[in-house]
Amino acid sequence: MPSNKVIYHLLALAGMAKLGNATSTNYVYLNPVFTLITAALILGERMSAMSIAGSAIILAGVIIAGRSSS
Image 1: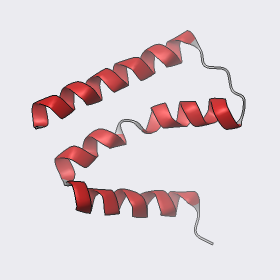
Image 2: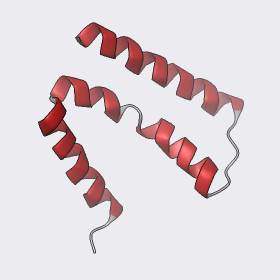
Image 3: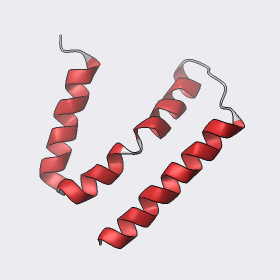
């Protein structure tokens, strides 16, 4: 059975092929945000104010970059 990293990279490459490099690169920056949410939901980790603020900055950056690339 392939590891999660192999599955992630296969899905990332498929996404890049479908969306194009410029659009799919923006979604790579969301990985820490999804990791934080997954850790909170599955592992019961507590989200600190700093991690929430960092996630908000990442989301704002992706939104701004998405608007300028289209």
